[in-house]
Image (tube, rainbow, N blue to C red):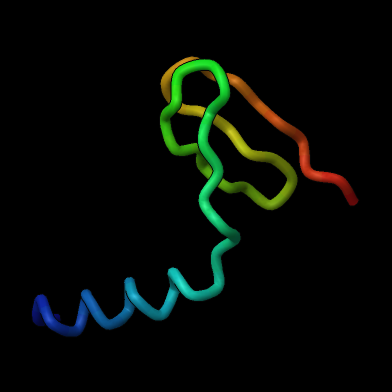
Amino acid sequence: MMAAEKKEKKGKAKAYKEPEKFCPKCGVRMASHSDRFACGKCRYTEWKKK
């Protein structure tokens, strides 16, 4: 697979993600999981509402 093809796939996947959320403790961008937001640096977690 060529580099240009990889960029296209990454761009398409980003459109489906939720807006970015930042950690209130350390300011790092939080990872979005199906049921929570999690900070990889300080392990702060916010659960999503159902």
